[in-house]
Amino acid sequence: MTALPGSLLKAQIGRAKLWFVVLLGGAILSAGLMGSCGGTGGASSSAPGAMKAASGSAVVLTYHNDNARSGQMLSESTLTPGSVNSANFGKLFTYDLDGQPYAQPLYVSHVQIAGGTHNVLYVATEHDTVYALEADGMGSTPLWQVSFINPDAGVTTVPCEDISDCTDLAPEIGITSTPVIDGGSGTLYVVARTKELSGGAASYVHRLHALDITSGAEKFGGPVVLDASVAGTADDADGGQVRFDSFRELQRPALLLNNNVVYIGFSSLGEVTPFHGWVLGYDAKALRQAMVFNATPNGSDGGIWQSGGGPATDNGGNIFFVTGNGTFDADSGGKDFGDSFIKLSPSGNVLDFFTPHDQQALSDDDRDLGSGGNLLIDQSGSHPHLAISAGKNGTIYVVDRDNMGHFHGNNDSVVQAIAGAFAGRAGNFSAPVFWQDHVYFGGVHDAIKAFEVKSGGLSTSPTSQSTKTFAYPGATMAISANGSSNGILWAMEMPDSNDRAVLHAYDATNLAKELYTSDQAGGRDTLDAGVKFVVPTIANGKVYVVGQGNIAAFGLLH
Image (tube, rainbow, N blue to C red; front, side, top):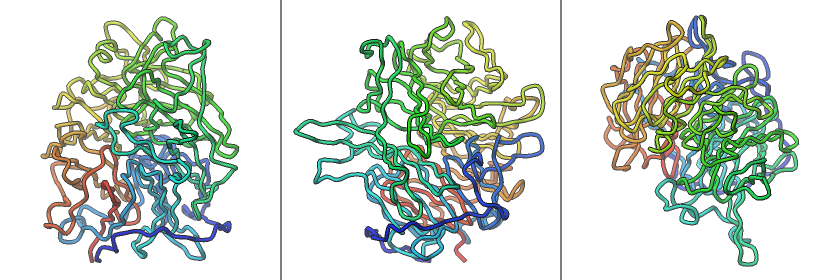
């Protein structure tokens, strides 16, 4: 196939209410499914709450496919290690976008839009736009698109220079996190950031939007402005209250939908203080605040960013994430949790935590524990429920979710701490993925490595690794497979020059076997300049990857 025409014109379609349904093995997809499209990872280990979609009915409703953040797509029967090579596999088409897409593309099959049935990609950009795109390349314009700015009325995206020196996110800030879709109600939840001028004064606002996936129309009386406060004694407290500051907070982690609540995490942009790590929860139908958590109410920092990875949940609805540099006093009864694994109840209470023994040194040296996303897996044995992550210090932590270990001044009371797991000093900036009793990491200036889940933890050395090393920010990854067979590890690379991104495919059972790269076929498959931290999306025989100005679809050429 040839590429579609470059520019996308804004589609104007009716706003009449339309119905939609997704079938999973004959059952209607409901809002209560955890993750919607993950799957078990072998006889002894699995991602909690994940499930397998029926063939032809793929959905990717959330970051890394499920609320355990496994990164698995287990209903892929077209793409196999035998078919993915430069002779048979390549770029099929592209869509131009109006801004940089830092969010992972989402996918729903069999959506009824304007009288037709479509497989649909949902893509959000930093220009505060959400697109619904025909996922099979059968049209050059969006099925619909919605913009949250109105420059004539003084409502724009946020220029990065308003907040920082533009080294982290440029040139504008709009939608940064991955949205989430409620399959039962056909609703896409997305947080957009705007700068708004009134009477010569500027205000900065985050809003939660609930969009009908068939039209882009606002639902449930939305949008709602995000705001919060907690009791605290931090330097920015006023009258004993620390207020959420939309100017300083960046909504970076992917959204989480669980038990009819949308959970929204925050950190800062460029660590411009004062800021705090926040998690806000909103009722998915009433769009009313349901919970508030601040990671450092009596101190500072403790941002929740995870390089875009979302908070995770277990089958009990508890919420797991990892914070970055910040004040810490939880070991002495305080409420500050810098550089910590945290387990929250759905109502926002800290149920358990783990903090490395050298937390203060990590914070002083800008070695964020929370630079990589966390992964939940369940297994048999003495530690059946695990949380796994790695940050800038290069140590992989395997934490028992039922007894996380708290803080000890001279050791780490966890299931396992694999120090020096990454070759580069920068450590890890990406979320691990999981398949068939293996956890995969892609550290900075290091190879992609597979670690086997066994004996209650991980193998201390990788069972296989790629021959290639990946520059900053390392490899961002996803897995496709047909259940327990035909596993492919997909990885995005951003070269040091930031010239153009490269898509890689590896045999997931042996990472030394590279199946394909997008630079093998001359200019046929080359990509746009890369966007850091974004993972590929795999669905129905195609792989979707974003660049700084477009989204490209890869698949079988014949």
